[in-house]
Length: 84
Image 1 (cartoon, one colour):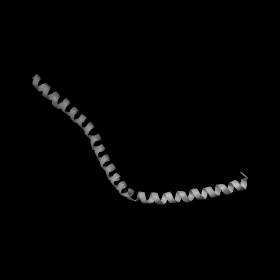
Image 2: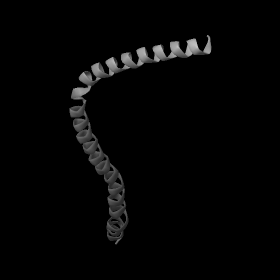
Image 3: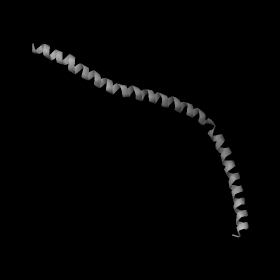
Image 4: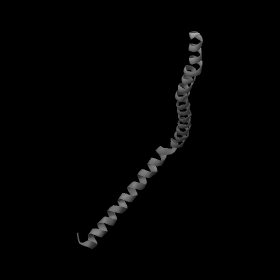
C-alpha cells in the first residue's frame, strides 16, 4: 500500500514539478537563441554596409580640411574687424 502512495505522489507532484521547472529554464534559452540569431543576421547586414567606409573617410578628411581652412579665414577676418 505504501508503494502505491509513493507512486501516486511521484506522478502527481514530482513529475509535474520537474516539467514546470524544465519549461521555466528552456523558454528563456529558446528566446536567447532566437535573439542571438537575429543579432547575427543584423551584424552580417551591417558588415556589408561597412565596405565603403574607407572611401568615405578619405572624402570626409578632405571636407574637414576645407572647412578648417574656411574657418581660419573667417576667424582672421572677424579678428581684423573686431580689432583683436
